[in-house]
Length: 439
Image (cartoon, rainbow, N blue to C red):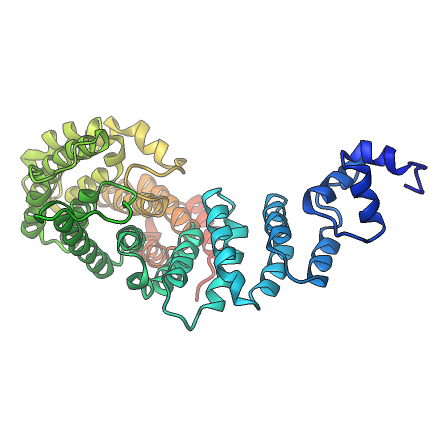
């Protein structure tokens, strides 16, 4: 005000703060509220968030006041001032009375998509309650697990392993989603034993809750509903278990699980979503029956299988993997099928969004697996240039998601066929390998 020659009334008009309130702030009689600071900064023509560090220090000069600190955390999250959030939250968690309020703030920020700010608060709350066996502690770890999932499969494995021990402390409804998310993560990591374990536990818990809700004479209502219809967790567990059997080559056992989600007459839910899901799983049962018959060597079902998957975009990639695997196993030609799905195969290379039930990690892993099988298909038929180029694309994909076993498999295959590889391909391979941080 001195620099610009403004009076209190003039600055009050610019900042839209009452002149009497402004006067008491300037005299130090009352502290500045968050909204008032933002208005002053705007009136001064300074960037948003200016003086926030000083504001935080001022907050700590007085007895802690949640009415001041809560809007400060939200504004700091909006402006991505993460270091400042960390500083404030650490100071606040020294007083355990603020932990519940901080947790609620983290939840709100999480649901707003402000994951970086939310994770800082979750970490602090979890640290404050690390010796408690509380549901809140478990929910913090669940959120941190969800936030941490990304393209790096090594980090995903560490996150899943760290979170797994907290599942039982969650609310019984949240446990279903947690087990589903863990199963999907382990699926993307090809940890089939863990997939089987998580899927069966999810199915067991969901079945108990379903029986409580619908089959008892005295109706039992869950205190809250899961994210998806309750029956879905049961039939999705069957789907995952059939996938595990498929991976192990236990196709007869896989067909038994298929039969469990082919007849859904027991399902009580009749919402629009429930009806859509029932229809989807009944069709999946038909498709997967063909799939497991194909993997058992019944090649005559291939045309029918292709017809089923043609209109089901979400199933094309996993289906093509199995078709190529079967072709490699039983030595038959699928060039016409690869030609038929040529545009979809090209799209998989750039597709980043989630597809259907499966998370990004699952899709990325499956694309890598598809390229690996496809390269073997061409190499087996002595079309070396095509096979090697696809193998190198597979290596790129494996490196991107830090899939160590896939990288190693690519290296072994390349070295096996190095003698029939072009100089150009060898140069590309050498460049890619130089970027791999081998352990």
